[in-house]
Each structure stands twice: as C-alpha cells, then as structure tokens.
Length: 479
Image 1 (cartoon, rainbow, N blue to C red):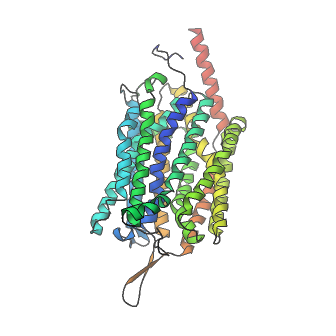
Image 2: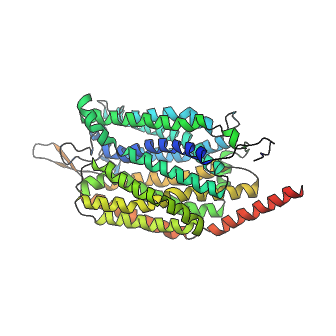
Image 3: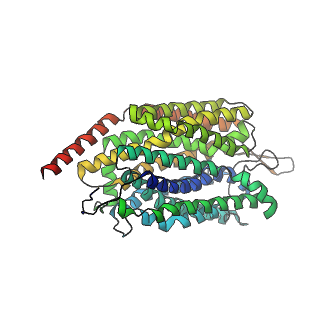
C-alpha cells in the first residue's frame, strides 16, 4: 500500500491485530477489577463469616450525605465525569500529535505501568486510621485511575479505526478485542479465588485480596506494554496530525447525525451494563445465595458461551449488517436483567443468567466499535481530516457519563440502612429488594437503548463510504 507520503506501508495482518488486542486484555482486566470489586469491597455488609461484601467498608464514610446519596457514590461518579471531560482533551492531543513513534503508541507506552500501579493503590492506600484521609485518598486515586485509563484507552481505541482499514479488518479487530476484553474482565472476577490461598500466607483475607489484586494488576500492565513495543505504528499507518482544537473537534464530532443516533443508545447501554457489572457479585451473593468464589466460574461460563458465538456474530454481521444484531443484543440483555430481578436462590439461577448473558456479550462486545469506525471513516472521506481519536473519545465521553450516573444510582439504591442495637452499636443492612431494584432499572434502560438504536442508519453510512471511496479512486485514476 502506498501512503500519501510515498512510503510503502506494511500490510495489516491478523497477527498485528491479535498483538494489538493484547492491550485490550490488559486495560479490561484493570477496569474489571475496579468495576467489579471497588463498590463490593468498600460498601455493603457481609452476611456470613468469610464474605467479601464490605470487607473494606469501615475505612470509607458510608452514611448518606444527602437523602440516599453517599459520599462514595459522589466520589466514584465524579471520577467518571472527570474521565469523560478529559477524553476529548486527550483525543485531541493524540490526533494532533507528531511523535516519531506515531500518534497513538507513545501514549500507550508511557502510561501502561502507572495505570496498573494506581489500580493496586486504590485497594491498598485508603485504609489509614482516619476516615477523612481515606475519603481524600480514594478521591485522588480514582481521579488518577480514570486519567491513566483515558491516556491509554483513547489513543488505543483510535487505532481500531486506523488498523481496521477495510471492512474485513474492522470486523476482525473488533472481534479480537472483544475476545481479549472478555478474557480480561473474566480474569478480574478471579480475585477472591486467588486471594483464598494467599490469605493464609500473608496474614488474612484482607491482605490476600490486596495481593491478588496486585498480581493481576501487574499481569495487566505487562499485557498493555506488549502492543506498545511490538507494533511500529508508522510502518502500518500513514497518519498526519490534525489542526482542529479539542472542543471544536468534539462539537464537529457530535454534529454528525449518524454518530449522535449511535451514541444515544450506546450511553444507555453502558448505564445499564455498568449497573449489572457493579452489582454482579452482590446479585450472586445476596439474591441467589451463591458464594463469591463462584463469581469467576460463572463469568467463565459467560465467556465460553460468548466465545462460541463469536464466529456466528462475525459472519452474520457481514451478511445481514450490524444494526439488526445490536438491537437483538439489547433485547437479550434486557431479558438477562429481568431474570436477575426475578431470580430465586440457588446456583441454577447464576448458571441461567451467566449462560444467557453470553449472547449479548458476544454481540455488543464486537459490533459497536465497528460502527464507530464506520462513522469515523465516512467523516474522514467527507472532510479529508482523520479525527478517529476524537470519534472514539466522543463515544467514550458519552459512555462514561452513563457510567457515572450508574454509580450514583447503584450506591444510592443500595445504601445501607443503619439501626441501633440494644447495646448502642450500629447495625448496617442492605435488603435483597434494593438489589432487585437495580436489576429492574437496568432492564428498563436496555429496552430504551434498543428502541433508540432503530434510528441509526447503517445502510446509508456504508453506502456513502463505498460511494466516496469509488469517487476517490476514479479521481486518482484520472490524475
């Protein structure tokens, strides 16, 4: 392939796409650790000896500060909002970068290890004798966590469009990173299983959990470094810095009608799925009466079902289009959340929910990224300006606003009721009904997301891409 500079670019092979996907494994592992275990460990109430619910709750303020709004909910939501605001800034920085190593890879290389280390710190440092100091430390560490996530993920996601330079490569890279995303998230649920034997070696359950998180975080850091060193960006991508300032670029991105139609449903999807992921361990332990050690095994089941469906999703997306499958994924997820809201006790319910959840995980793990890449490519063909970083950042911006809202809703709905025992001590409790309410909210949100996605016009986007590519080819031939 000839770049515009006259330099011959190397072909983008499946090997390169798999190396790239390893980075997704790393950051999804870190994200999974925080999304699955942060609220579970720092809030909630253990029901039985050995439960991990609320293991670190005594270190952080638990009482509501306004109605049912908790300080912890405010801190985590603010971190998500900060993350969302920095997305377009980092995306613009990346789009405009002219580093020797490329526009994306240098960011990934610089931040991978700090990202892993701050994840460890979140579960180790806010545990001093001062609750106020712990609150401040939690706030600062979550801000750093989300900043590092943005610095890695925004340039990383921009590479999805740039390495997915054809429809085939686009669907393939979306499939591969979906696989590694699920693998990373699944491994994150292994924390209690790893912590069990470690606890007897390092002085108890709390230290075992911290050490397990540290080990998995370092694995994640190593995975994030791999594509940074093995992919020479300039050898595969002819990227040129853009000149549009950050927020003007963001406004231009949201001015794209097809992108807005996509984002409306996407933000609701992430609101719903974040509610589900945040409460997963609590749903299993409190609603189904399943030990938290089963969280990993049930996640493995979800992963296996999802992976078995990957070839079918990949094939069907090319044959019938992404839109129909994405809508199917929304409705299937809403059914999963509905089952969760109505479930009884026993491992059967966990197996049923995990098995069903594998279906939308396969669909919605692969195809939305490809939709963003489609819209980004169409915009590049129309304007001549490659702002793929900003398109993925704009999607992430909206996504994280939904996630921030989900954190506020989850911690508010599941806030513990405090009563006084006869001896004057506090008794904290969270009812099963509060967790069921979360599942009902997620169900309604997913149905809404499915309805909104009907307005996305996939055939028009793909048709315009082919037309503009043909016109460009004809013009080049004429010259």
